[in-house]
Length: 340
Ligand SMILES: [Fe+2]
Image (tube, rainbow, N blue to C red; front, side):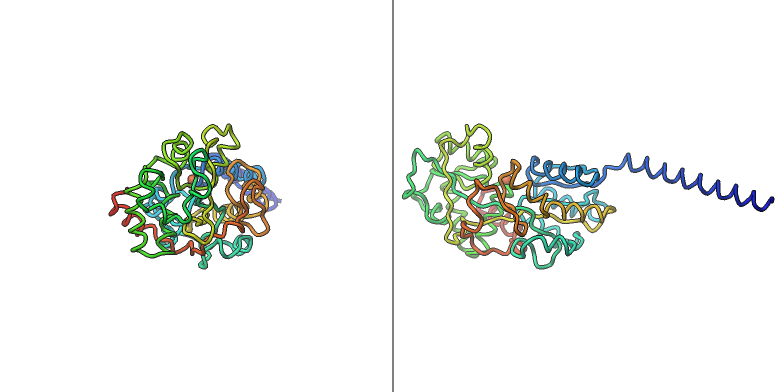
């Protein structure tokens, strides 16, 4: 009898301790930031993805907002102590930096299988999550189609002096230069950057450059496509005079830049972090690109992009290996050219 009672009280004590352990875990979870995403993609797109993911899974996500290179460098500095579980970028060079530092965990095969090979690196340490194309946004009131540059390289000609703009300090533009470097080599890139310095007006951001075109300050600007579509979807007030010229022809100016997503190997939330990456590259996540406000291209297998966009397949983009875009060399060349 005594033994029985002892056993019973022991069982009770065990149950009570289990209960308090559960309660403790519950309260610890409540104070947890959940999944931490360093988001260098546009804030609105990051938010659309995070909200859809949390709605579907109940997993809380804290998003921190920054730039491609800013976060890449921060992650490298933080190393294993980084609070980031997931890193999302606008362009791939920042992914390559973090991958080069050995800080990514391999992306799960199910996730990689959702994305065609051309939109992800062969090492499988990160994946493409969206894509954007380079365009020459031009003043329709000043330039007829026959006056448009045939190639991005034409813009370095003295004939284009004082007539165009760009946002050279941004990761978007520097990815374009990285593509040029990969496609045409260092000498051609140096020559083009000299042309850029001589001919172009630097603007602080792609939106500002497009606004300048719209206002007649410059005849055109090298930007990405979604700035125009985003403005058109709102009031169109910063793009009403602006047309979009796609260089096509496998020209460096037809470069399609891949936005990347990766899971940090130091994460304490590996399962959830991998689930997030799987979600954004999967059907529902890619539908956010088609139906949301980003106007970026979907890259998932069989995923449709917004029907307003010129289809990716029609852009005749040059073949660029995203994982070897050399952002360090680009910074070096642009610094030497006095651009940044
Ligand atoms: Fe951008």
